[in-house]
Structure formats: structure tokens, C-alpha cells
Image (tube, rainbow, N blue to C red; front, side):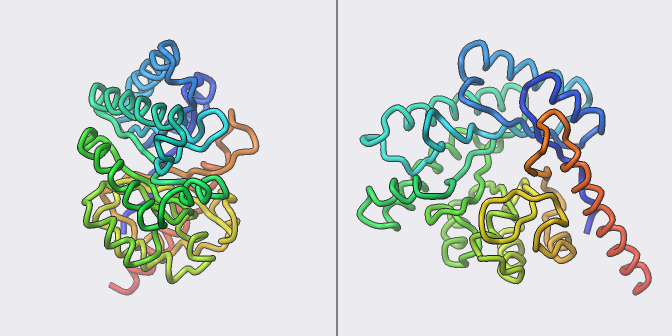
Length: 282
């Protein structure tokens, strides 16, 4: 077990970046929106990446935009039914991969999101399995294009969820570089800590990045660590020590990352107690 790293998330807004950088994080993850993919927005995002790098932060992740107009950026969306959304996901992913290669950073793409929207999209396929295969086919293309610069995050949706061993085996067969959101898996498993731990253990060697987030295990609540029902001590022992991580917590104020920093303090205290216990046993 290693001590958790300080990973913070914010947009390319200078005030948000400077708020995060005052804590000297090990990892910075950029939140993006559709506005970052206009020529001006893309230039601003590139400049923001370079600024963060100039402060000595080498581990940088750019999160693919969550929404486009009224839709979530669902890779399962069929092109014939959602041509504009489909094209946006294609072009924005291409842009992010190009930026990631140029600046030697990482891109995170969601395998899916959650809710009625994705259910309606999945229903446009003959079966859930057909919808899932369509997602894999698209992610296979992105993986080939992005190489060691792209990763895929789990959802609370039937097309790309962790927690189900058979589905995890299928995901592993594609040899994807994985991002693991603890809250998404916990919610998918209806608040079952043992199932979360089994998934962390099963996927560990393929995970390159974690979103450390607490949850009550029912809905997408994105809680500060210690405020939900995840048992963090076993989780700490199951993280891939070579992976990066951030605290993806809902903030009261987007220009103050207090809840992310307090989550790190909480997890670090648990890690210290675990290490002290290990030292006593040895």
C-alpha cells in the first residue's frame, strides 16, 4: 500500500486552476465542456495545460465533456438517431487525443453515464448486448487512436459498468486502459462494499486512474470521502500503486476545492493508521 496522492479537479478557468495549485497537487484533472472545443476554447485549454505543466505537475488528465447540448456524451448513441451528438463525440475525442499526444498527458472518456437518457438510447438496439458491443466497437477505435494516452471510465449504465464479473472479463478482453470511479461501482452494486472490493481487485492491473468518490450507494451523489458508506480502508489496499487518482467531489463553490482537499486529508489519515498497524505487526 502507498500513501494516496493529492489529485484535484477543475476547469481551464484561471481562478479555478490557481485555487487548486496552491495545494501543490500531484495530479490535475481538467473538467471540460463543449465550449472547450471551439477554436478559441481549444487554444485556451492547451494554454491551461501548459500553465499547469509549468508549475511542475506532470500527471494531467483531461475529462471528455459530460454533455453536449441537451444530451450526455453517450458513446452508445446511434449515429443515425443522434448524428450531431455522434459527430461531436468523434471530433472532440480526436481533438483531445491530439492534445494529449502533443503535451504527453491523458484523456478520459466515459463508457457511459446513467439515467433515462442512456436507457432510451440502449432501447434503440435489438438488445442490451448489441448496445454494449456497439460501445466496445467505438471504444476500440478510440483506444487504437489514443494508445497510451486514453482511458475509459465506468458508468452506472448497462453498457460499461464495473461490478459484474462477466462484464468485467469482457472489458478486460479488450485490454483497455481503465479509469475506475469508486462511487459508480458502489452505486451499480447497490451499496455493497464487498462487491466494490472484488471489482477493484479484479480490474486492478488494468486501472491507470481512479476517481475517489464517496456515495450512499443509491444515486449519483459524489460525496466527500467519509460522508458516504464506502469502507475506505480495504479500498486503499486494493488500489493499483502505479495509477494516478483524483477526488471527484461535488463542490459547494467551484472556485474553492475544500471538499477535495478534506477528502485527501481523510484518506491520508486512514493510510497512516494502516501503515502503523502494518509496522506493529512486522
